[in-house]
Picture 1 (tube, protein in one colour):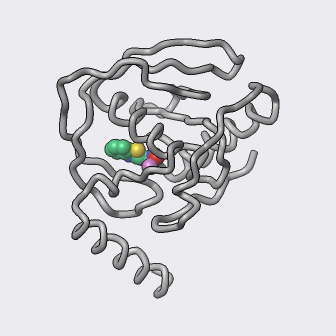
Picture 2: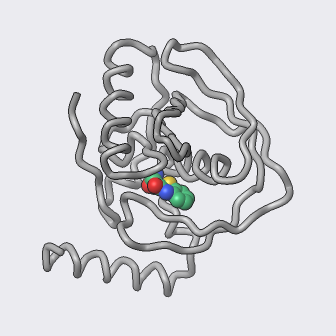
Length: 168
Ligand code: GNR
Ligand code: NI
């Protein structure tokens, strides 16, 4: 298994739109393993393939405290979202040490393929609903800070670019 490098905002590759996975084969299963290892080591509660510069629709999530409840979503799509919305304080492995409030639908139903290539549907609320929407955004080339005001976004960009320059 290999730990993968995570792209950091404002890397333009984070805006690439991921393609659907055509076949859930051993190559995809290896990618899932590598992404899971990368997520656990980071540590984070989710990771989208976009963040490791692979532009295919693969997401791994583990919101459990015990870090042993891996959830895999291939070609995920939101098939229903509640009208009710909720604000959550989000963070992102591609935007280190930046946390801010984002409003999203409170509950969503997701349809995806599992590691065997079988279709499943899942109703998500609370942190799982936030996380799956955050990850599907990555697959579409969107990073959570892009929901913030232009002023905040510019401050975040300069902070991260400065940090990059000083190798912090
Ligand atoms: O580890 C993560 N924590 C988190 C917290 C609140 C909302 C979303 C997230 S996802 C993030 C990992 C990540 O960057 N996934 O893309
Ligand atoms: Ni993220």
